[in-house]
Length: 76
Image (tube, rainbow, N blue to C red; front, side, top):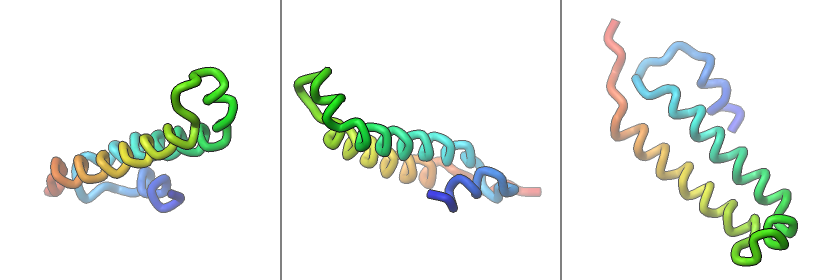
């Protein structure tokens, strides 16, 4: 994840570089829901933080594929 965050500060060679920020957001969501697993379940009573963690991780994986499909080289 550190490499992804550092990638935000490098000069991009392809478009859609800002999608890495969205990916970092999904990672942060996954970590927060993992940390507050029991508290989330006690409030929602349907899913736990662990379940939401897996959904956020899957969304992050989808976002990477989406980024790779839509990006184009930056010609200078």
